[in-house]
Image 1: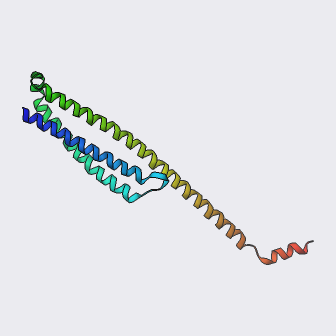
Image 2 (image 1 turned 180 degrees about the vertical axis):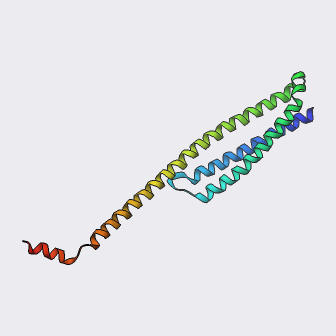
Image 3 (image 1 turned 60 degrees about the vertical axis):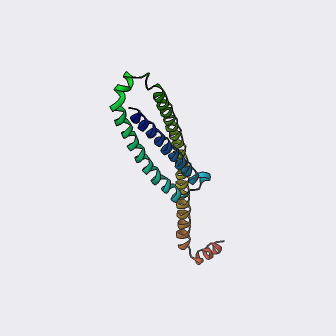
Amino acid sequence: MKSQLTILSESMDQKIKVLLEIQEYNRKQEEAFKNGEADLDSFDEAVEEKGKLIEKLTRLDDGFEALYEGISKELSENRNQYATEIKELQNKIARVTELGTSIQAQEARNKKLIEEYFRGARAGVRQNRQSSKAAYDYYKSMSGVTLSSSRYMDQKK
């Protein structure tokens, strides 16, 4: 039973490590979109690495849950005997929850940064399109004007 509790504890340690790595990649994503400029290569790299870490986190969760289901009955029956290990696991679970909440907040901030960047990029594209259309319309209207038309205006006086 002690070895199974040790495995659960190590699983939580690994999960904490993975969550800290995800936080670091979130910081890299935030840096990629700071100041209204974007480093899309850095952003893509962070997204790819975070995907791998999330898969690892899922595997850790599945393993933890499977092991915990196997020992939960004995743990509840012998709670006093394993009080120290249970308390340690509870502290690690609280840390995992805290990190999860922090990551969600980072993700929300990053989403807002990305949306602002793309909103600005769309506005720039729209402005360029309008400028191009205005220049084309001007060119089109001026190409129909001949030099002789100004001469006719002068003669009417």
